[in-house]
Image 1: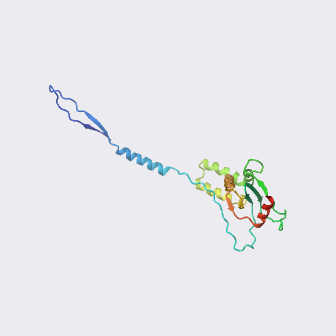
Image 2: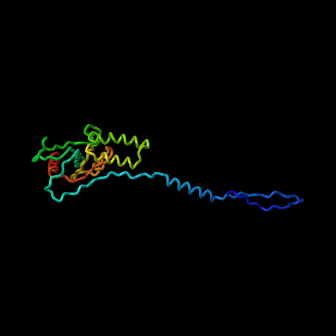
Image 3: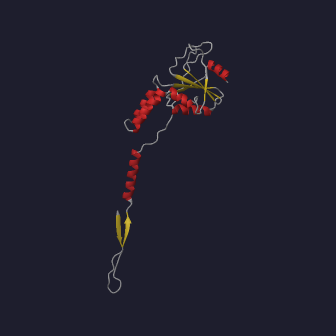
Length: 211
């Protein structure tokens, strides 16, 4: 609060009495209290940025290698070698044990914008999740659902049967940049189940022939 400090006056000559001079003094204590109250208010009501991470699932190796792996349901496999990106859909069938449609063939993809771009392929495979995610985004933007509800519903979408699951496999020539670029594309396509794993003997042989 402002205070006025009075200075002494007195009679100066011919008996005239001068008015007392006053100097103002501002007490800053209430202002400091108010500043701390505002700071506390903004800290408690502000929303801090949340770290955005993409979970990767690392499957454990089976104890018995002779046991057949479980059947792949809506799974896409990417194989990185040098600066090249290959892929195939579904289960892997070697030439010695072909499936009903024959043995597995590797197709080449790229990080460009053509028909075989990774982004376009993922958008096609994961169309179910992307379409439903648009509806969730609208509800989140209009405050119809909370952040936690949005995350839970989106996670439920990515593990459903209709959602694509991705396996990432690399050989000893794969570039770290290619792996990072692929993970970025998977995040853009809202792929929720991603599992880096090792190349099988049949995949290594097929990759050798492709290169």
